[in-house]
Image 1 (tube, one colour):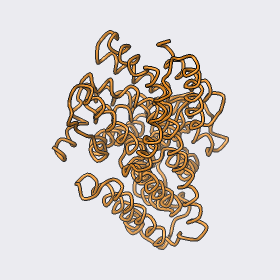
Image 2: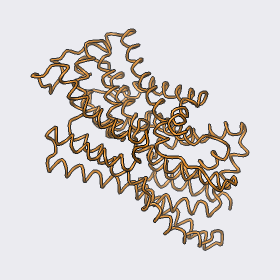
Image 3: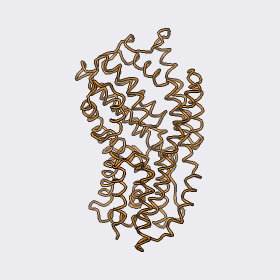
Image 4: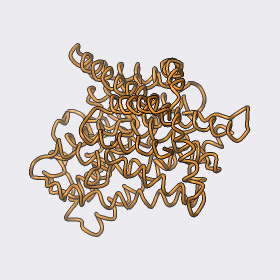
Length: 461
């Protein structure tokens, strides 16, 4: 009977593979197992009486209010042609060098990731804007698709990422839970701002490594990453100089990112307040670009409502699942399993990272954050891991999973918008160097956790 929580988890994965919606799968499987448990006397139905207060806690959570605002900001920026103008300007500036277009894609992808915070949106946008130009100029399809997929997944780790907002909220609850079980009755909390600060250095390292890879390819195989002329770039305003194009394209999104991220990191605003500033700033940018039409505003609002509804419906389903999972003694099962693990905390962490990596093939980061993290994080935190370090490791691990063939989400997003001349095998081969880079980063963060914890300690003490 003690293996029932394991069967619950297997049942959820099986039903998801059949194609059922995640939120209804989580809630449905939980209710079925709870019903069987009540009928057989193995589950106390009083556990379900805690559900209304948990759902009220979800609705009343001020941190989660940042989600619809950040989604609105990203969708509005996507519609305002900020990315297109920025890519054109950066392509002119960097395209005069071999591999320069790859570096331009990396830098624009970083800024777009910081602006939208959504992996799918970044990959699709970069695929539509940059892939045709790269292929037309003779860039190797493997290199082109690899750099686009890799920079697209930066939205997972570059703040203000929606993934980090959700992860920060879940980790904060898990950390308090772990401290209470250890007898600490005035527990510390982990803020989303601390998680953002912890992500800055690893995110910048990834961007720098991607750019260095572009330089290395340009030195070793210059013919695969040729130079790009100004006249090869479609959609340019020929009346403007390169400097004017760069300034008008770069300054607005940079000011918006500094306003949003800076206000969070330096404590001037909470993530929710900063998200409101970002949403308003993105609206003004769209107005300035002449893109704030009724059609665009309607599309942005529709997209925001759909994504936000999906997130909160999954969260409600996950709350019910975790309640029933704990009622069957799932937390004790996980704790006992980790305690018997050879290698102690290192072995337990490796197993959790491997499981999350594999689950990244079939589940989105939202499902993993709401379902898996609340189960495993309290146990790992009780074993002495730093919550900020653990959060960043999980985020980069998922980012790597989304890149890994044959099931990586980023590969599917790019395949959907890439020209038919680009083979799926080219996409798979192109991402391999970037997967290696991300695995090396995970290893570096494991050896030197200060790469994550240094900036939060400096900024928050």
